[in-house]
Amino acid sequence: MHQEADVKQSTPKSRAGQPAAISHRILVVDDEDDLLELVRYNLTKADYEVSCVGSGEEALKAVRKEVPDLIVLDLMLPAVDGLEVCRRLKADARTREVPIIMLTAKSEESDMIAGLDRGADDYIAKPFSPRVLTARIKALLRRHAAKKQAEADVTIDVHELSIHPGRHEVTLGGQLLELTYTEFALLRFLAKRPGWAFTRTQIVDAVKGEDYPVTERSVDVQVAGLRKKLGTFGSYIETVRGVGYRFRA
Image (cartoon, rainbow, N blue to C red; front, side, top):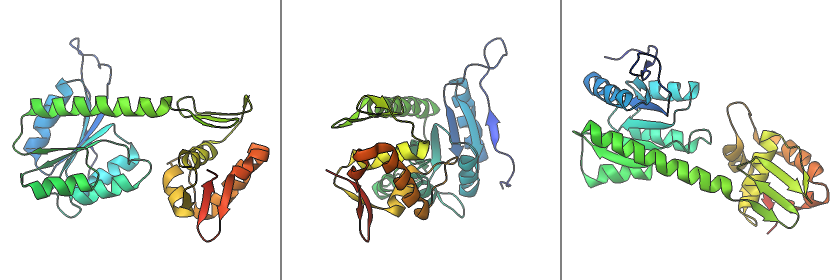
């Protein structure tokens, strides 16, 4: 039985016994102690920082404390199962981009589809080879990094307005605008899909972060401040009555 205790964590060591450089943080969620120890050993050996928990509740608590780079998540967990944990993580703007590999003792196609439908990025059926899991993790992290880099390299240009996600910069007529984190996230979110109307709830889900709380009511305040900083270009952020806001196509 697992208790709601501190998260078990392992840090890789160099050959000289000193802490090695951490490449990525992996959270492993499973209610089988033997499997956790096996996975922890092999991933630590592969120079990953590994945290292990034995329930869905502990997993959600651990992620709230520190967002990992990847999650290995068992499907069959007591109380809050893996599918529900996956659904909650993918519904949260702070964690939706974290890659998830789903583990399950079942190998039926329906279980694989259920996991992928909840947003899981990969699927491995038990029993599995630790070497295969390590290889899958490495490949998924590599694809995730490439995707993030590609997104960061795409600049959104609308007339004299330029939004550069990688540099986290916005220029208007060649002049750099001083925007807050939330203002930048709001502008980028709307400008990525010009002509699309988004509700305040959708905007909150897209731009919120642990250190930047946003409420539906404060969206109006953020939009007003952003329009002011954009000057005449602020009219591109249009109010859609009864819905929310959109960026003019």
